[in-house]
Image (cartoon, rainbow, N blue to C red; front, side, top):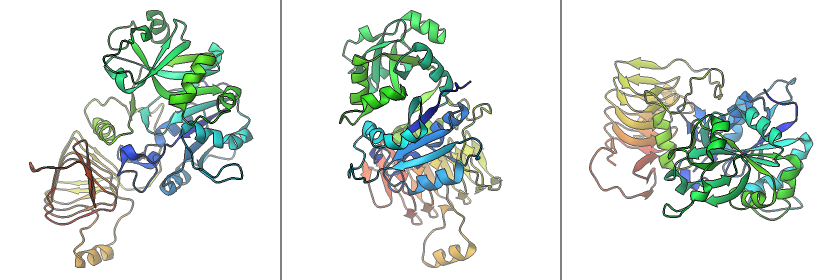
Length: 431
C-alpha cells in the first residue's frame, strides 16, 4: 500500500539513444516499440501506476514527437485522481539556453516544474529497463530507514559486475562505497553483500550467483536531499551525484531479486524481446495483478491462414498467410504474405493499414507493400515500423560477409540486421 506522503516519479528518457540506433533515428528512446504492442516507456509508467503513483514526469529532448503522441493517446487520468503523465522536453529559458547535459542536469533544470507538486519524495526511474516492481514497498523501506536516498540494487555474480555500478554496504543496508564497472581481474571482495542483509531482505543466503549488489538506476530521494545534491554543476547521477551522496549522506539500499534487464543496446533489445516469445520467458507479461499498460488501438484479432507458428507472439491486427514463423515477435498490423519464413525476427509491424488504392499506386512504382512479401526468408533481424520488404528477399540467410555499420535502408549491429523504419527493400534483395 502506498503511503499518504506525496510522491512524484521522474522518468529519465535518455539522450540521443545512440546505442539503440537506428531504432532511435526518428524517435526518442522511450518511444521505441517493444514486445509487439508496447513502447519502452510503458514499463516505468506501468510500475508507477500499479504502485499508486500517478503524478509522473518524463524528461526527454531528442525526437520527442512520437513519444508525445503515445503519451497523449494512452495515459489519460480522470479529474478525480489528480494524475498525469507529462513530458518535459529541454527548453530555453532566461536562465539557460542549453540542452540537458546529463541525467542530473535534466532533473535540475526542471526543479521549478516539480515544485508545483510540493512533493515529499522523488522517485527517479530509467526509461529503458524491463522489470516489475512495487515502488510503494521501496518507498516504505526508504521512509523506515530514515535515509535521505535509497538505491534499488540487484544481487548479481562477479562475472556480471563488470558492466554495472557496484555498491558496498553494511549489514543494515546502508551504503558506504561505490565502484563503476569493475574490471574482471580487480579484487572487489570487500564489496560482497553480508549474509545477514541478504537473509533479512530476500530470505536467501549469499552464494556465487548473488554476492554483489548492482545499482539498478532507480532512486528515491527525500525532496530536500534531491535539491541539495543538485545545487552544483554536476551533470550525471550515476557517475557524479550518487558517488558523492554516498560519501556525505545517509544512503540505504533496497534489494530487488526479480527479473530486471537494461535494454539500452541493440543486442540486449533483440535478445530481451525474443526471450518474451520463449516457452518460459524471464519476464511475465501475463500478470493481471500488475499489468503493463499501453495504447488501446481497438484493432481486430490477428488472422492466421495455413501457418506454422511456434515460440512466437503475434500482436493484434495482423494478417499472416501460409507462413513459417519461429522464435519471433509479430507487431501490430503486420502483413505477411504467402511462403514467407521468419526465424528469430522482431517485426514491429505498422502504424497504419494501406488502402487498396495506395497498394495499386505503389505497385505501379515498383514499391512493395508495407509488410513482408511472398517467399521472403528472414533470420536474426529487427524490422522497424512500416518497412516494405518485397517478394523473394533473403535477409540474414546466406553466408555472405556483413560489415557492421549503418547503411541507407538498414544497419548491422552485433550481427543483428536492423531494417529501418519506412525502409523499402526491393524484390529479390539479398543481404
